[in-house]
Length: 346
Image (cartoon, rainbow, N blue to C red; front, side, top):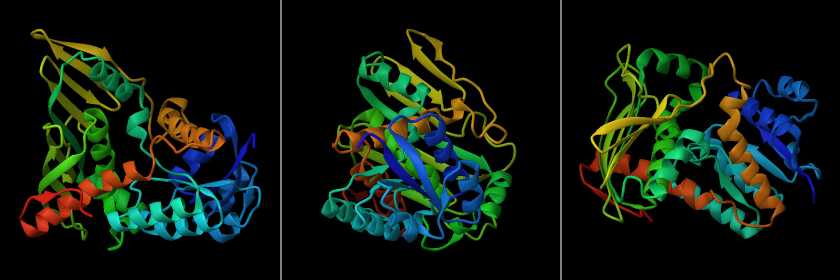
């Protein structure tokens, strides 16, 4: 097989994102059909592909070899089971699923069907984060001792988000917390090269938003002794904190890294700070098809396609997606019980 036919399930912002990636930037694959969501017909028309009435119709197509699940997280287990049963490879948006149990079921279904299961982890594919990882792996800051990550947003932005993504408020969804935090937890694991073994968290909703876990603070212990801190909130008063959309701070024996996904990578070493990398700028809302914005998504999809063509497991598979969800689920359990939670959960 020289070209992978891909079906897009989901037609929202991320459905558009991956359709553009497939149409303009990825080698060895083509978009075949779109289904799911009220914009499916328009998205299919824009890219000159088939508009199917539902996911089952996409999965029934012989020219579809793989699917991208750009859907609400609470639907991904059912869709993954159907895709695996149809012999289709799966790339699932993050969070992989709302619970560890559903992640396990997705992995089991794909394993039984001998199809690849990959999970979107764009933090591993950004130029700024790859540069940070390179500095760490090259020993520039020495062995890591402490890590901290912050993703905090003003409540006004959160209200706008819920107005267009009401499914995030459904009780069987991972909500905005998992949607945000699974980026952060995966990146901490990737940077440290370690697994979380204990989590203690406080969880609250301070605003009038009718959804739980809008603010989370957690302490994370990693199996190599690294100390970690996670701070996620979507209910800050305006103007919010500067440079806090997706921020990471890494303290090593010999130096410190401070980075924000869209703004900077700074190195503190030898009594001074140095700006070692500054990402290219783009307008997230006005330039959804900007190659700068799409760069990490191109990396995710290209790796998924390459894994199929090369008949190997994906580099970021179900186990990685599960581990990110597991830390988040442990936060919720810890807050509910008032106890530190040991990992793995199951």
